[in-house]
Length: 430
Image (cartoon, rainbow, N blue to C red; front, top):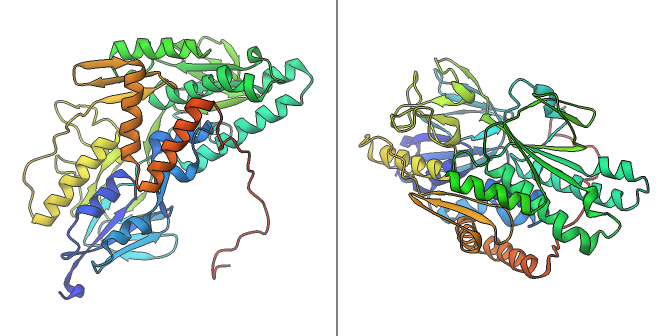
């Protein structure tokens, strides 16, 4: 086949949506260029375990080039590590910080980033968990605080140093608070004997009337009980008003010490500079699409996964920002483009939701079935383990989990600060 006659598809984002689309698109019909700012695919549901030193970062990251190598016989499959700056829908070009690429069809699957709502100053003062880099930074500072607290003789300073606050009672917030609670209850007495368990405070703040708002009421209530058993204080029905001088002030003017604040309260779509068309980001900076994931107002542009806003009678506010939505949309769009025509619109098949609050503590909602405890925790482990790319990653994470389960000792509890020098210079750029 003459490759010069093949249509060119550019895919922005190597997450669940982008990678599943690339896997299923017909490489004999199209040239595909995948663009991502990292050269690896990561698994966001387990970022909190990296942040709490439960597993190693390499266990949930997989090189994109190695995954794409499976299709090495197909000509016209490329990967570019770059950050997208501008999308011109009239000229049909994507401009990165390195080059400008022409496309015949564009697939935007860039996902989400942190949303600080009306408090942009939080960007420089809080810890977030939207990337593996952020998870590693969080882990380093948790370990650093524990180490420094061991040699701090002033009790009041030690208490302030070990005050942790998690904002947001969704799955990530509940899971990271539970992981910190496990560290307080089980790890401290074994490895940090200089620290009194009562000197660590862990507070989870949620603005609604229950944690895990998107799950069943049974799961929410059980998760709250699990958190309390792990010595986590749960505050419901209050939002954070400001964060200054290591103090969280709530909307009722209550003040809570927070030397380390972990923000999991909101997300928004990754921002792009659009030109040449009528693309206007909607609520949460998501891109409005029709039932076929085609971006409204332009042609030959699709948006998939968390960044896409598709409203339906079942989901008037858009589909949940979950991996399964992204995967199912990617499969549908790849199928339609391969066929050269659309068939039926997207219909999300909900396979259930789950969250873990530590070992033997998890909640699972599958349609109308709810279960909890050890079996739910085992189900959560199996589902997440099978979702990882690469057999090595699966085995590595499984061994970490089993070892930690029986010993309460993790080999990933390391404090590794990056070096500062020499100063890095961009290749051939001033």
